[in-house]
Image (cartoon, rainbow, N blue to C red; front, top):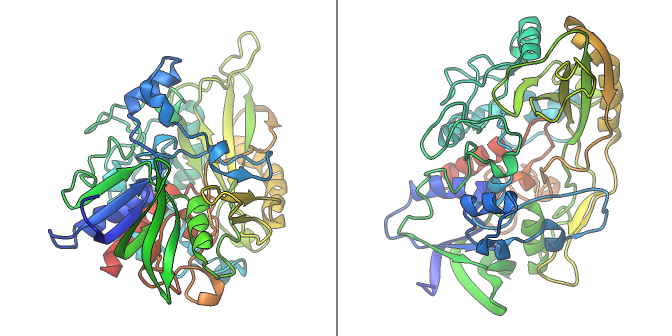
Length: 479
């Protein structure tokens, strides 16, 4: 390392850390010293693509299967994630809807869960900033408050999308997405290949192709292969970060520490350090997703220019959230949803239905006998979510009555949505959470804990845009 101590140490290089650093570096002096500790290594997109195609890559040795990085007590529940430079920007699918204003006021509006210590208006300017940095493609009319155009034009509708948009207006929109609708700096236009985890044309936003100008900043020293596992706590201050690199114990000190890994590792670091907050690691989870296949009578569903072509909000907001969860519709344009019937190959549409869930203390993250490996316990869904599934099955036929529907086929819930949420939740009251509205630990006031782990409740909407906006907000307001 270049220095014995730093102004700032950041753990991780994913969305949370990168967006935090983007704002932080714009606000601090040129002589600031920043150390970034990345668990994995730089694994270029071009090399990931080789492996995806079945070819050899010398970088393949840097792959860390998620199943080996955590101890997952419930094998029926999957938690895929990517370590290495860029974190889960390498495996995400690029869905970037904003949360609805009501998502931040669940207790006030519906008597459910807790209110967030921030609201939609707090994050609104940072949503715009994150959308601009990601070059998001999106429509002009949205169900959430937003004015003006997105950085890139909306993706084009399929035939089914056109009918539903005509029927429901801005409750049915082209999905805002970080999959480019036309070529832009460092990225090509999406070709709807539906292999977004490793995009074959590099159309989705990643930290690698982002041109954020963060990790080439001369103030930053980045160390790869640094597996952070604990902190040195002195009173209410964090003094050092402990990590293992190439089998050796190492440490580094700084005035300010930022944990920007995923919720599993952030929690593991806090617990190994001796954090006594009873909510650390508690109440994590994600949305529940399930697919419904819509068989169409004498109608081909053609067109559309990306994988998730549209979002439907017809079952999202309203007084029903006092009793059961919001549901966001993701309308798939994947080529593998076809009918195996002569003359009816394209007479089908596919909706993925995403249901919000609530933090349950029975779902928790803890440390294990191996200090590098968090232990993950996920046992159940809330009844709030399960009731929403039954309501959806009752309401969906009416919602789709504008289409020539032959039948609906509901598939089993998916084992994962690729989102890890909760475990270090935000709150105004230290008794109700782990971090405050600026993502600073309630007790250790020089420690930021970033990412979706800080979410107070689990919106039905995809989390990445919101966690990125929160990082911008935290760095802007705290410095």
